[in-house]
Image 1 (cartoon, rainbow, N blue to C red):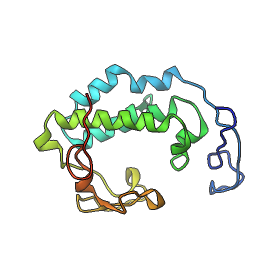
Image 2 (image 1 turned 180 degrees about the vertical axis):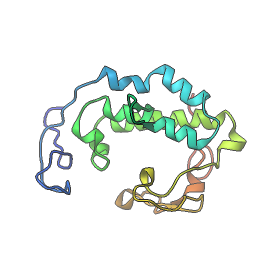
Image 3 (image 1 turned 90 degrees about the vertical axis):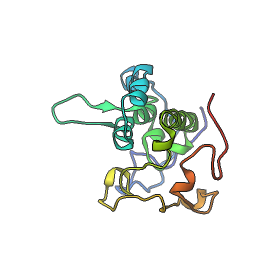
Image 4 (image 1 turned 45 degrees about the vertical axis):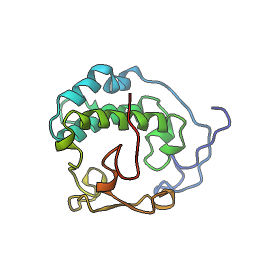
Length: 174
């Protein structure tokens, strides 16, 4: 990955993280952090959660006071490669690993969804902010997904993005 630069991630000369900060991407694989994305944890995630709220929480992972943190399948995938941009919310799409990782996350969700397609296709949980920071209202199926300049769909309702085989999507995992 020599020559690939990253201009967003910490450490940053500005406290708001928006300072110019070029450097090469570094990678340092972590066996410990990869455990959250193991086959056993992925299988447990898919088979052990009947509702979307529990599924989402386990996919992200959790930190409980006095216990070792559990980095879920999603969080582990970002952190296990041990580099600045993949752990930075805004810069992570620039990392070569990002889209392979998120394709796997989509596949895991699709498998979970297909285990009870009638019940799980249009079920959501949570608020409109990541981990409810800052606190916000609950999301609805009629909310618009807006990813700014990267929005190829020019704003799509959550309900229209819930199935891999309906709406604008037409794909399956085999």
